[in-house]
Image (cartoon, rainbow, N blue to C red; front, side, top):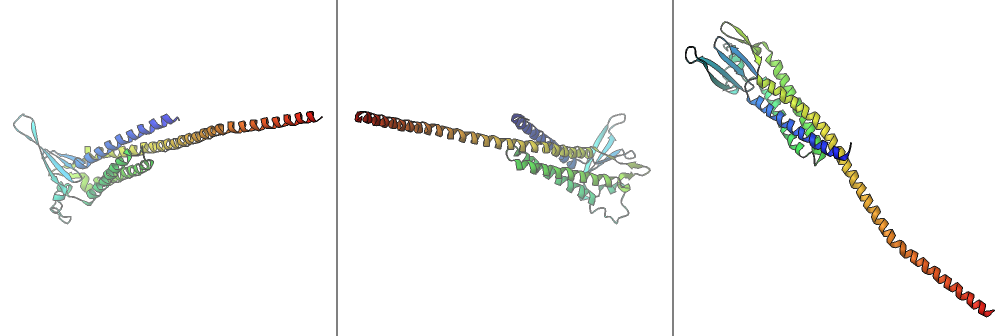
Length: 269
């Protein structure tokens, strides 16, 4: 792979990693903030109940006039406000009211997703610096891995507890209703998958970042060696003519001396 391809490839992968990280963060935050983790429609009361991690909403459909469309009314409450209203030892709690209690597994799921969002946001900051500082690419990958694992554990905790009998089924006056997963749950799954893809893309980006950095070091070393070799050659060329001239002068002097000796010898004879 050429140096230009490596440089362009690492930048493209870093941009893709940033986009995936932003999308995953938004999906996870929306999933935490919305109440539609579990939904159930109570036909007896013509109400739709949405149970989230910390927020519950009730959508009531009441007809305004005969033969007219219904006018939905939404009422939301916080789970932590109802924590003291229905203690665990109470036997008078209605089946639907059980869903409004702020239980320990709700807190656990919230904690895991808050950790995931925190790790994902920190990883995003390090990803911006990955093109300049290669260590940042490694840190971003580790944080994205933590975000993925934390989201996965949070979803597993929610999935297991949501299938408990007292949570999964809601008892009305004459009927029993089964809750289904809402859009918040599926948004959380998409966010978790986004963190996983961000981690995988980040690995490829990190490899190209290190390859590009190695190529840059080799190019710099080659340039320095070429420059030093050129300067030494120039210095040698400047010195060599002087030595040649000195040798020529010495040879000329020797020739002149030999001629003078031969002339004197011929005169003497």
